[in-house]
Length: 167
Image 1: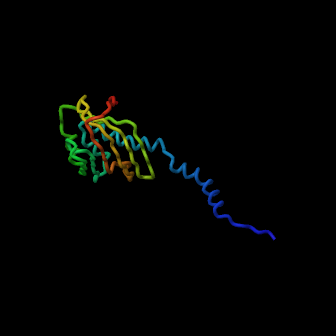
Image 2: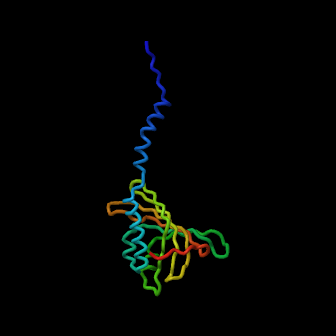
Image 3: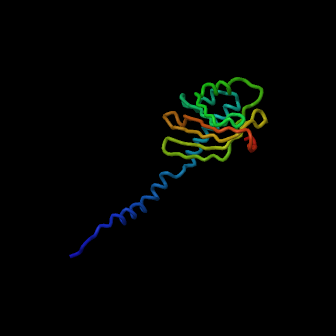
């Protein structure tokens, strides 16, 4: 008589070993999707530079929120603001003497299905003068009309900023 013993732990380890490569492929970054997501952000900032609020709005969900986490002047402590996007769009679409130029670098893109997050360093220029810098955190969702920004959060500081060349 032969006795067959079940070893659930070993079976689980073997199953996990066989499935991990498939799971890794499913979650692996896709350069094409990363390019699609970044193209949305580039369009947003192109609209800002061109004083074209319609172009900027074209990549925003209608209910996009802007969140800013900063510091009150003179070490007054943290301050957080949450605003709808309309006021910001009006400010970039209103003619002004100097170009508003938000330059970004070192994006970190995370995508899972129809949700994406982009964390990116930025330096904001008014004309050629560096005004402030920080980090932008974008939340994007993909619907029937493609990727749209649903939220933008940023930090802002006026010291410790690094220059980012145009382009």
